[in-house]
Image: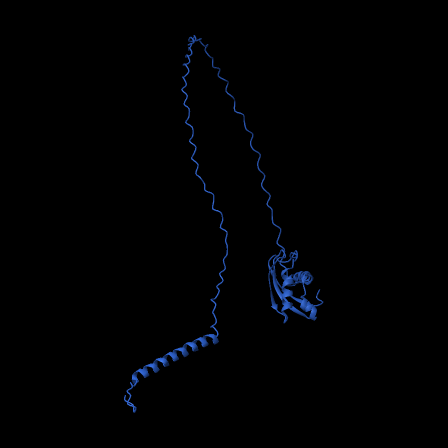
Amino acid sequence: MITENGTFTLMPQPKDHQFKYALSAAVAVEIILVLGLVWYGQTTPPPPVIKPKEHVIAVQVVSLPPPPPKVIPQPKPVPPKPVVQHMTPPPPRPHPRVVIPPKPVPVPTPPVKTVTPPAHKPVPVPPAPPVPPKPVVTPPPAPPPLSAAQTASLMGRYVGLLRPMIQQNLHVPAELRAMGLKGKATVQFEVSPSGKVLWAKIIDPSPLSAVNRAALAAVESGSFPPFLKKMPKQNTIFQIPVEVGARSN
C-alpha cells in the first residue's frame, strides 16, 4: 500500500486477523468451562453413597453324632480237629461150656379109679303164695263249682289284699308333692295263681302323666300273694283304680 508520503507499507491480510480472534475466543471459552466445572465441583455436595443391604443369615450349628465304631470282623475260631485214638479191641471172651443133663427116666403112674357120685333126687319147690289184688283207690269227688256270688266274694277278698300292697309300693313324684296335685288312674293287670304280675297297662288315664307313671310302677313292682284256696287256679285280670297325690302314702 502506498501512503500519501510516498512510503510503501504492507497491509495485514484479513484472514490472519480472523484466525487469531477465533483462536483466542476458543481458548477463553475453554478456560471459562474449566473454571465453571471446578467451581461446580466445589459447591455441589457429593451424591449420597447407598450402602448395600445387609443380609443376615442365621446359621445353626448342629453337632453330628459320632460315627459308629467300626466293627472289625473277627475270624471264626476253627474247631480243633478231633484226636482219633486207635484202640485195640479186647480179646474175645471164651464161650461157656454147655452141660446137657441126662434125660429123666419115666416113672409109671398108677391107674386112676373113677368114682361115680350117686344121683341126687330133685327137691320139690313150694308154690308161690298168691298175690293179693291191689286196692282200687277211688279219687275224691270234685268239689262242686262255685257260684257266681261265691267267686265274686273270693275275688273281692283278694282285691282287698292287693289294694294296700299297691298303695304301699306307690311312690309319689316330687313335682306332685311340690305343687300339691293329685290324680287317679285305673290300672289293668294280669296275675298268675302264684301271685306274679304278667303285664300291666293304664286303661283310664289321668290328665297328669306323672300320676299314670306312678300308678303303673306301683303295680308292676308289686309282689302279690298267691290266690286264695278256693279261687280258680288260672290267670286272672284285675282292674284297680290307684290314687296318686301328695298325701297318698
